[in-house]
Length: 385
Length: 76
Image (tube, rainbow over all chains, first blue to last red; front, side):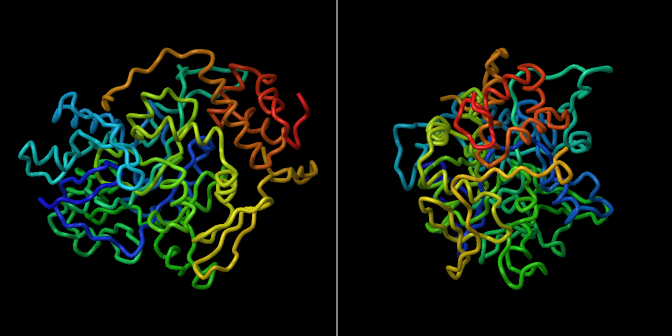
């Protein structure tokens, strides 16, 4: 099995294919601190892509409540248990081995899902399991609570801390779905690193469903092939009718009411996403120990116990929350760019008064004040219930 | 650092308090007025903010916003 570099793990790792670096890599940052679980992103995605027969249970974008929720149910708990079984008590990080460029979180000394499968001599390319139909059926089951405010019946309610985890396909640099596919029906686009399933090649073996650790490829019973989040690639290509040939952010990102999402490129130093992940290091990958080098990054919620967050986002959590809680002027400015435009921001500039976003050709596309003015609508025009 | 299984601490009064303060600060930073933020907390649809509202009370939420020098919020 070839060795490939994984900067999130701070070392090389086994992967079935040689590294194929795209011209640039699609990436996004989700700020968990701002999400109130309104599910607008979920419905924006659903209404755009998965409204047809056989897609009823498909939620390419979902928002689940942690620690007790998951779609499919228990997806991360099950995979963590499989990894621990493959390498008991060995899933550890050496945080003394930090290197700003190649190992920003230290070195992961445990096994990735690829290495665990190899060690077990399994026929799988990556450690995984196939969720049952029951686990797919209801995306937020057991997360809902009775919400009667002042009267009526009430159901048992989770009374501990929780937070919302927003999930789409991570368009990983080393996708396990791609590694798993016996038909080579899954590919990573050279122009933007978006991972797609070729619907004509797929024969519905469900190996991608089984081996993607994030469980984002989904089997469609009506067509007997698998489907997944496509990162709204027609919008990224600038083919959306709303804007002539100008790259736009995905539906889930543009629809977000809380402005928690920002899209960009992880390998372009001018991109605000690069700044948040690689320079300021406030945004972290989801379960980096799986080894797929996921490209959706999260600003961790500051109210959650650190051991839980470190398991989920790796050892960079404490520093990330510290920087986020005491933000630099540049960070404050970049945070203002979240949700500020439907256009894709390629580069940015922060001045004393404003955060400015530019398109690929360096033209200004958005300008947001560092300190937002408060505008109170008159009662007859209130749009908040 | 072990990466599998984390113990969930028993809930404390501070759990939801920090969560509530964080929501208030985030939305206030985006320019939401005190009235607009309170509407989110009062709405049972938004379970996170509403849980804070029910357990900690209206004065806690208003206080979290007023503790900073924010436009659109009454001074605490």
